[in-house]
Structures are given as structure tokens and as C-alpha cells.
Length: 460
Image 1 (cartoon, rainbow, N blue to C red):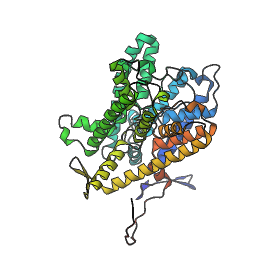
Image 2 (cartoon, rainbow, N blue to C red):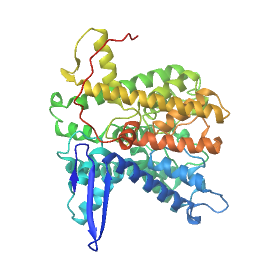
Image 3 (cartoon, rainbow, N blue to C red):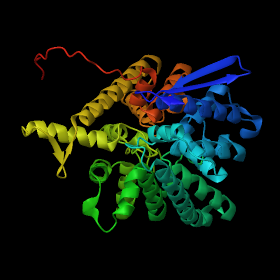
Image 4 (cartoon, helix red, strand yellow):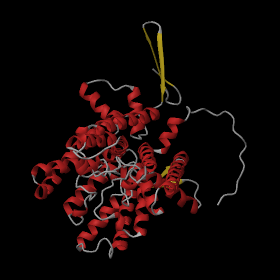
């Protein structure tokens, strides 16, 4: 195996002394093909009769939509998860969520470790790409931390949720619901088993359910490298990496601002009938869940238009890099916001927390923003042609699919065939990231020896 300047693999070998093959693939291309393969395998399993409840009809497009939504940890569904699929179907969906949330290479690392096999450079490069990590150093150790932290977190919160729901649903169903929703929430998937698209509306004022689900969403969406950094410098917060500080500050600001605004906008609307504490809990839940989680405790379709548009913004920003969530990411938003503030103040460098952000990272953040905005705009435009719905509902659907959120203004089950295919593609692009797909389609990096003269243009 060789690796060229563009991280392109060249694998060669011989068979029978005559046959020779060569496979060239970048980490980004392997990720795209890997996720696609898992989605199609999941769709085939969900098409089996044993995956569907008796009397329920399921075509391949419905199974493909559900599998894509699960692997891309989105939560948008055409049929009700709780009543349409059997226990086998639920297990398939849950497995797809876990594999999609952690990334198939992280799960492959788990198998490698179990079998005692050595993880080579090729696998390390793919893990680095899948986790959006900046360095190869310690990438396997990080994968171990991710697996251990995921297992402990999901099992711990599953136990709490199982105890809570056992009072309402009985021990057997309560245990299964606790495990399913713990894994779904930690992976920011948004799938639920409560039936008839109810999500968690029955628990809007329940502190145990609200705090457990939102904590799982935050832990899954904050980024594993951030968690490792916090644990490492638990007693020395001043030594946290700039990435960690930016993630925590932007995430905290978005959650706090979202909670306050939703509380004020919906106080006399969807929050009516809840206790004072229930209003706060419901507002907090709706501020956290657009961070690519997809669950809801109040009817999204009944929200004020201003609240729905606020959720669109939160969904577009999404979670943090190296997490189970989607969106353009909190650090992208934070880096661009700091850069704009720097330009307004007339400063030469983009600085925050007494550190400087490189111009190449600002350029990458700008590319992500433009590609994401272009994708959401294009998908919304196409949906406005094929679907009969208000434009805000279409924009909400497109952003939810791109951000792998799973919230909907009750539009998903009513999509046309073209609309369903379009949302499938958008969820796939949103999970991988538009920049990853662009890298997968691009040629290897080429060094430029010739530079043209610089000339000014008028902007603004």
C-alpha cells in the first residue's frame, strides 16, 4: 500500500501470477461508499416480512427512507416507528442508528479490538476522516474512549428511563423503551416508539424524561474529542483546547438563547396548560432538540411561525464536529461569527480566548456555510415545485433533513415519491457533510507553482 499527497490509497496485488488489480480510494470516498452500503443492507432487512407488522404494507422506498433516516441519525419517518415495525424491525433500526451515529469505522475498530487485530494506517486514516479529527496521533485511543463512553452513557440513562417508564408501561415494555430511546437520543436520531407520531408530547412537563433525553442529546452532540479534553483537564479548565472552549461557549449560548426565546414566543400558545416548571422544561427541550436530535415534547406544527423559523436556524447550525449530530457545526458558526466581529473591529487576525484561528480554517468554514446554504436552498426550491405545502414547512423539512434532525411540521408522511427521494439524498448529504462529499468527488490535491497577480474587487 502507498499513500500519495492527496491521501489516496493505491492497493495492488496479483492473483495466479497473471491477474493484477488496483483500487484507488480516498478516505472520503470510502466513507461515502460505506454509509451507502449500510443503508442498502438496512433497507433490504426492513423489507423482509418479519420486520413489518401483519397487515402493514411496506415498499422498498419506505424501507430505504427509514434505513437512510436511521443510519444518518435523522428521525424523519414515513410510517410510525412504534406501530409499523415488529420487534425485529425495531432491532434493525436501533442497530442502524448505533452504527450510523458512531460511524461504521468506529464500530469496525470495536470488532478489530475484540479480535485482537492490528489497526493499520489505512484504517486510522478512515477513522480520522469519519470522526473529523485533526490528527492521526491517538486516533485509536480516541476510538476506544468513544466506545467506552458510549456504552456507559447509554446503559446508565437506559436504566433511569426504564425505571421511569416501567411505572407507565410495565417492566418489560419499560426496559425496552428505556434502552431504545437512550440509544436513539445519544446518537441524536429522534426515533421513538410511542406510536402515532406522538414523540414525547405526553412528557412535556416530566423533569426525569426531559433532563435525561436532553442530557443524552447534548453528550452525543458535543463531540467526543471535547468530552475527552474535559475529562483530561477536569481540574484545569484554563488548559482546555480552543476547540473545546468554542464548542462549549457556542453550544451554551444557543441553548440558553433558544430556551428564552421559545419560552417568550410560546408562553400563551403551545406552552399553555403546563405548570411554570413544565413551561421551562418544554422550552429547554425544544431548544436542545434542534441540535440534530428530532424528538419533541410539544406539537411542532402548532408553533408560531417565528418559533419555527428559529428552530430552522438552530437545525442549520446543528451539533459539534466529531459527534453523532449534523448541521454546519457549532465551531463553523463560531469561527465565522468571530471572524465577522474581527472585521467589524478592524483587527487583522481572528482571535478568541487568546488564541488565533488560521485563515485556512475560516476559508473552510465559509465553504461549508455556502455549500450547506446552497443545498438547503436548492432542496427547498425543488420541494416547492413538487409538494403542496407552505414554504416555511418545506424549508423546515429540507433543513431538518440536512441537519439530520428529524423534526417536521407534519409534512414527511405526505411527501410525493420525488420528495421522498430528495429527502433521502439530503439526509445522506447532511450526515456525511457537503464538504466530505465534495472531497470524495474531487481529484487529489495538486500543488500550484504559478500564481496570478492579485487584483482588488468591490464587495458589499
